Image (tube, rainbow, N blue to C red; front, side, top):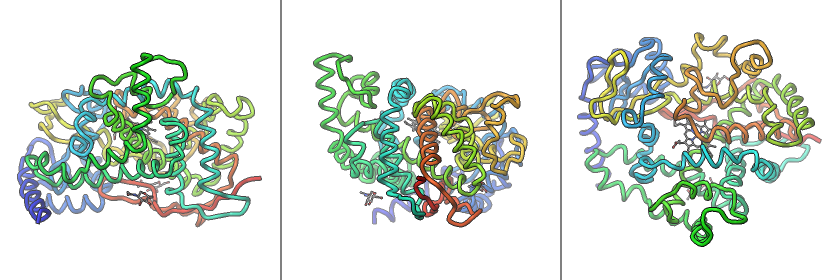
Length: 491
Ligand code: HEM
Ligand SMILES: *[C@@H]1O[C@H](CO)[C@@H](O)[C@H](O)[C@H]1NC(C)=O
Ligand SMILES: *[C@@H]1O[C@H](CO)[C@@H](O)[C@H](O)[C@H]1NC(C)=O
């Protein structure tokens, strides 16, 4: 009964929200009329990349609308507009409400996450500052995790890529975030992996509700207390002990652990200094870190086995770097081909369809410098994937060329474009000033993992020359969940 009601209510508000027209901003594919808009919304659901590509070439340097079943979304094109969206202040275009929109994070996770996103600063500051210092621990975990999760000998075995990399990435990332022994607790890892999926599904259900009903009904859908109690079972004791120590010894004490909790406590104030509030931040960071990184690693392995001519040059580079610097962060920093390969993999398969999602929070709407106005409450983003495939931005744009960025770096001129550099033509990590704060860690971790694979494993495609097809659900692209590759230990 409840669901029927929700559905009816959703349809009627969808109708109202959809009717608000902004005549000055054109709709993609002439989809302004009621029937045309729902037809395009359905096409968009099944084949979003094509619809967005149409909008990209139909309105170069312009802004267009795409109809979804519930509302119109706004997409801006061209370098100048991308820069304007990226640079807009939080009180005009909200970054945090924009990235929280598709999971309805105010209701699923709670308002502090979007209104006081200090955990992002803890990543940008404490975590990033400590990368070199933590490298040994991270790489120790990496070696054990590959050994245990893959359990390979010198015989070829078919490895399901995404599930395996998910487990490895969760473990390695959590060695840095929470340390031993929790980073090896399978239940803790699975809970964090599932949490993202959980929140996403609950968020999609809440999104169907009319705005007035969201605060009333979402508590039943979000199950915040249940989820929080499960997280507290894992991290509650650790947080309580840390808070006791801070109360007793102040913010600096001997043997204070170097981990996420310490970086959070450097910034947490007032009500944020409680076990549930801190546990929620730990969940939020895991949520941002795990799926993104394991998808990137999975894509890179699909690319490595689909385009195997890259294997030997990168293997040689990794061995050389380790010989010169030992297995250290300095060695990782010297792996320019591996860096370029990962960036290229992100370029072709690691960007959102709509990048830089922002919510218009200025009452008078958001006005571009040419006067184009996007209304209050709308979600505005910029073309994502299609920018990476635009021949105006990249030579042979549709072709995977793993060393296109390292060749430039090795002296063919042009600015260095390491993996962590964002740009109006590279939006995988968003764009400054609100680019992903975890990207320095992600890049270090991914490069170390790829180097480890190259040095210690042989890899080949399940079917020569066939890259497992990406899955697409609406606006969400993910590397194939079922794809496999052959792997064996090198001796
Ligand atoms: C290859 C891996 C990764 C990719 C592709 C990625 C991508 C992104 C992107 C595009 C954003 C901007 C928001 C958006 O457009 O959705 C973002 C935000 C964020 N990322 Fe990442 N990310 C990755 C890894 C990580 C890691 C490892 C961490 C943590 C250690 C992390 C922490 C965050 C946080 C906390 C935010 C929100 C920013 C804030 O609240 O200020 N990310 N990420
Ligand atoms: C979490 O994920 C694991 C592994 O994918 C699965 O076995 C388990 O049933 C999931 N648990 C929950 C509560 O969703
Ligand atoms: C992933 O990359 C390959 C090229 O390596 C490309 O053919 C494919 O279309 C990409 N998938 C998506 C969804 O962009």
